[in-house]
Image 1 (spheres, helix red, strand yellow):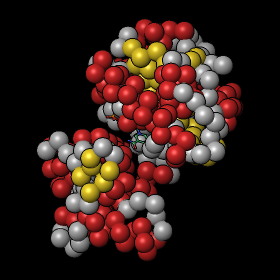
Image 2 (cartoon, rainbow, N blue to C red):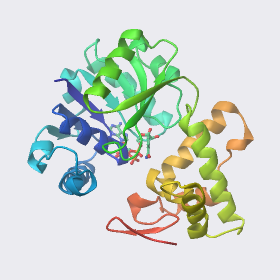
Image 3 (spheres, protein in one colour):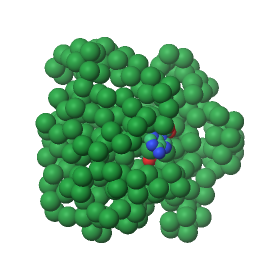
Image 4 (cartoon, rainbow, N blue to C red):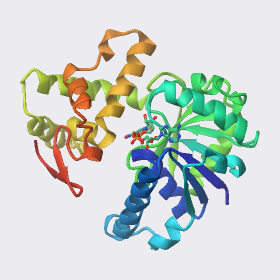
Length: 289
Ligand code: NAD
């Protein structure tokens, strides 16, 4: 079993850590503050406890078994002996870029870096390291421990060996994968972020309410969630940062973030993770807003 380094214990990192710990890997989960790691530990515990209700066919695992395989730490140096690193820090190049310099200096030269970004091109991330051939986009969906398929992004220099190794790691954790070429936002978020932004514009312009917009997508198109519920799940801060990456990368005004999105982010209403976004959330339950 590989020892997996997971950097960032927010919405995505905690799910990625849970997934690999559930499949028997030792995981080193790193974030910048103890209170974030405590929250990640508690969320993973809740998810493991609820797993039999959500995934009745999945093998039963105890909370102690899963969290016992995860080393929760604020010390990046603990990644020194990892065999594969998956990075899930804030979608901000000013944060990711210096981190990759540190990871490159710390981790064994053979350790591949899986980049869990919503939109930042993988070739750009790879250029911040001295191991561009071992950098690959591993775009997990949210929640990472439940979603069956991962979008893999091949950067300009990503080697066949890295691709094969990454696919094997994911298959070993019961995941499927689809591999795409490198482009900001890849396939999924080139389409999804525009859709979410347009739904926010509809609300902003008073064309419809948040509840009605979401109901239309659920009931007319059979989507599991409407676009505003999806934005709340992703995190409105992450949606805004992703749109900004797309806007800057393509220099195309079609990606301009809706002013209402900026306002909600400025107001600290980031969706599910803060309890309020387009809808209100209490203990995981949704009240339509
Ligand atoms: P988040 O804001 O919930 O969590 C980010 C975490 O990174 C925070 O806990 C923060 O403290 C931590 N962090 C910041 N700098 C760090 C550093 N130098 N070292 C260690 N930890 C650091 O964000 P998220 O939603 O989990 O997104 C993480 C990444 O995954 C982003 O690049 C995002 O675009 C991508 N992503 C998000 C989703 C989603 O639905 N939220 C889906 C797929 C991919």
